[in-house]
Amino acid sequence: MKTVVNTDRAPQAIGPYSQAIKANGFLFLSGQIPLDPVSGQIVYGGISMQTYQVLNNIKAILESEGLTLDQVVKTTVFLKNMNDFADVNKVYTEFFTTQPPARSCVAVAGLPRDVNVEIEVTAVY
Image (tube, rainbow, N blue to C red; front, side, top):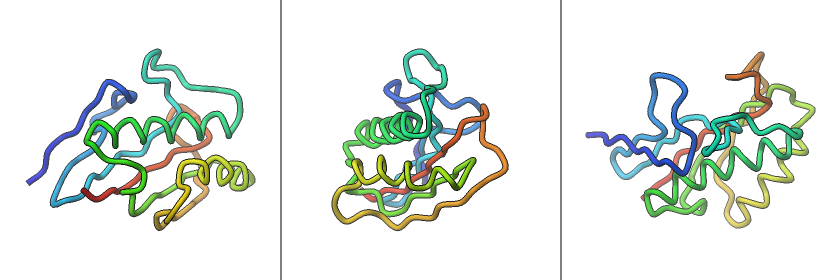
């Protein structure tokens, strides 16, 4: 059984998908891009600013379910340019300070709305 999770504290889905799905003790978050949840506009200002917005969006969805970043067990980071890896890591370590989750990081040919970073996570209840 699955339950759709949706919060107005994070950007609404821009396609036919849910912000997150709760199933069997897990919360599966769709990939988040650097959209401001209030304006619906992309946050510009470089890869660091975009990464902050993405992780704040993730944090908001987790908090809507009473979870924290400490309960994230897996992340996947999609980068438009692997040269941004170090800058993304600097921001990432500010959010995942202890017992960081397992992670994959891949460079992709393109991301929705031509952003530079997208991150998806899986958390446990």
